[in-house]
Amino acid sequence: MKTILFIEDESALQKAFGDILTQDKYKVISALNGEIGLRLAKSEKPDLILLDLILPNMHGFEVLKKLRQDPKTEKIPVIILTNLEKMEDVDKAIELGAKTYLVKTQYRIEEVMDKIKKTLE
Amino acid sequence: MFEKINAQLDIVGQCKRYGLSLWQCPQFLFIVMGVFIILASVVSYLVGARYILSPETVIFIVLVVASILFIIAFVITRSFERLAEASRMKSEFINIVSHQLRSPLTNIKWTFEVMASEEFKVPAEKQEEYFVNVKENIARMVELIDDLLIVSKIEQGSFSVAKIEISLKDLIKDLVERYKVFAEASHIKLNFYSQENLPNILADPSFLKIVTENLIDNAIRYTKGGGTVEIKLIKEKDKVLFAIKDSGVGIPKKEQKYIFQKFFRAENISKERTRGSGLGLYVCRSIINKLGGQIWFKSELGKGTTFYFRLPIK
Image (cartoon, rainbow over all chains, first blue to last red; front, top):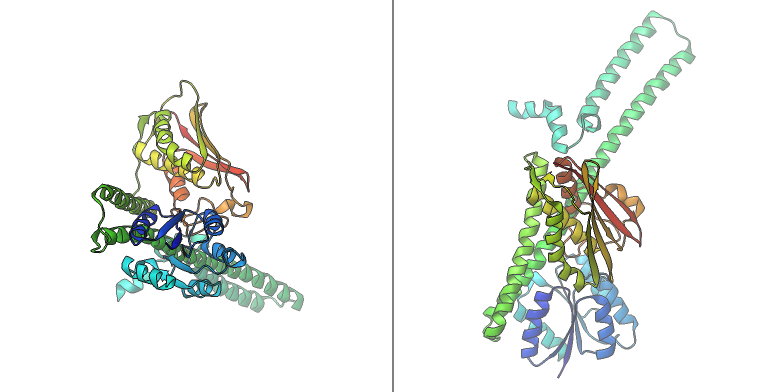
């Protein structure tokens, strides 16, 4: 069973995604902020990380940077899931090593699921 | 056509539209400068024609005139700077508001997508949870729009408050009860102390609730990683003093003078984090002033902030 770490401060999204991913036989671990997310990434070594950018205390870019600097987490693919849609944010995320960048309002939940599956294949 | 010309000539009206006083308004200052230049030219001509002046005196007069013009030009430039700053803050505000509306909208959209999904069948026992999520996110949007409407009323001057005899102690007690769970969720202890026999005050309960909710919410939100928030109510002569002390991030010194300005958000807090539109403290100050009170704060970076307001006893 593949493990997905979801770093997102919106509990409603955690719930909706968590349920749908669990039903698709993924193991989902959730983190409501970047610090917890980093800790879980190291200890649980997930197969994929879904990362929001606007997070309390630590920005998603900072989390991504730290994930890439740590040998334990540097190879885990990261999908950015955010409402920020500026070109510079997308560029920065890719430059920092994100695999895909998805703007929440532009995607249906099924499309996000497809991206997750493709990344994990 | 005539209406357009009239609008252009209505300098006072134009300055009001920018929200600037007459002596800070570029249009008005431009006219003052024009009149001053014409007068200076006429007077220089008359003086020069009547008396034969030494070249030093002419240089002196020219220097004085130039200096005055320079000062006026400086004030005009500063006014334009203020306008540009106001415009920048508005753009930033639109960004923040859009983001804040987008987050709950996305939550609602995706929650409904999961509920309507053919692949994923939401078990009956989970449906209620999903509806609660939707309800909470709609409430978030309503709250933000309410804030915007209050600001709009303040701006238009159509903002009136009732003055009813109320117990501030009871109002705070209810709020503290409501916020305790929220505070505990972030390891924050919320303490409330009120002086015995605190007299009632004259205020508008619904507006006063907005002020106190904003201050309590901020104190909890900006106290990171646990701490204490203390609320005190004390009688001071013919007034009641409210104080809320947090052990939070504090406000940087150079930004303290802007804290009650509309759309302003301090640098040491994430500008796009959930909630926090930069309107809360502006709304608080407008309400407290309207109720005949004063609001102020003391803050130290990294140590915390205390907000105070004082309202008259009936």
